[in-house]
Length: 94
Image (cartoon, rainbow, N blue to C red; front, side, top):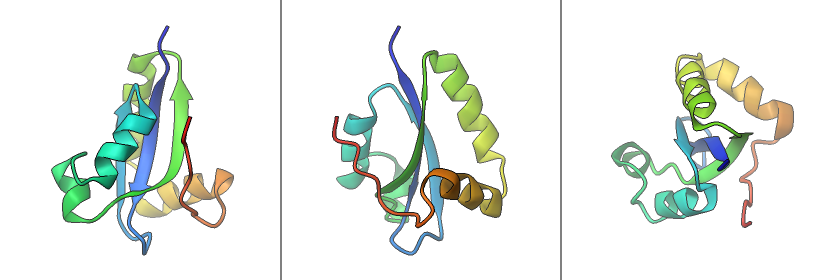
């Protein structure tokens, strides 16, 4: 089974978040960095990967994405800080 990912991107000020799902995280982050990932990420210059989760089932990843999109901003920040306390940009070159 192919791995899937839920990921969170942000801007350099860490004020706006984008939550997405993909089966190829490295490729998807590259697209976002080129401004080709989505209109929202391009508009708000969201290029910094600060969080991701790995799933064995794409349907579970989609459910998690929907759940996180409904969370308040401070809940998202706290989730990210559990594994990335300084909200640093993650390097995911696989």
